[in-house]
Length: 340
Figure 1: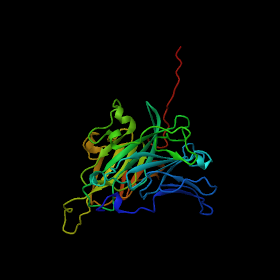
Figure 2 (figure 1 turned 45 degrees about the horizontal axis):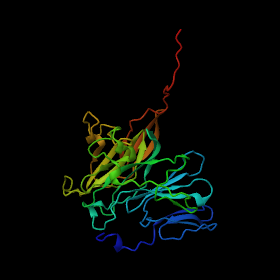
Figure 3 (figure 1 turned 135 degrees about the vertical axis):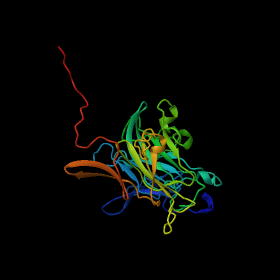
Figure 4 (figure 1 turned 180 degrees about the vertical axis):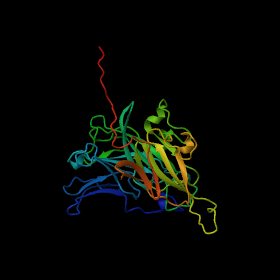
């Protein structure tokens, strides 16, 4: 933890593998430092910059609901967010794209050494520029809970669809595939500077920077310590911030400040009056959880109470209802009126 990227020899945990579920054989893999090969049964794709550990699960999306995965998303410990396009049955055409990089490459710039430790949440949306996948994830190294040097952030990246095929995300200059590109794709990856800074202001639709997504800079030492989930347009995630003082009481321990966040996935605005302030100001984007500690990842549920279904999000003992439509209610979206 005291050195930079060059102090550790990374040889394991730096790739993405697709395995035959029946026999355990690797049928396709991508990673840094390997030789691209189209050999049947051992497809290998060399991906420059995929040189850091991937500690989390991979988020898998079946966009057209045909029972087959279309895209994979995952982050790594170098603050890179990766997308794999699993388009069609020809694995030579499967591509890997580095869609975002939010950590510094300078070993001495410790404050900006951000890591993705949990899988991203995915929400599909549209704006004036077309359709996109909102990729939502926060940085934070939960293995160094007391660190206060690194400035962590929460992100929403707008990953645009391919202009010719919506099942694929758009390629950029980092995109690679086994068959290669006859015309090298153009475009740049997202960085913190290319996102709207929603730390002190929700996204304003007239601001062109918001078209790439947004970011919220967290407090000193605060880090995201869970995966995210989005229900009814609201994204739920949890953080922990080390504290210099323990909680009140002689028998209590110092577990830091635990916060629950609920923000609009499209604009980073508050969607609930979490602190009973009587409004939806930025102060209502999060609330402090008594007792501190590392809150578990939020889980969406639907429960039946007295014959009525209710939607909720659970984090440990905390249960919150998202500000969405009541389940089992019919909402009229179109009507026709003929007047003589």
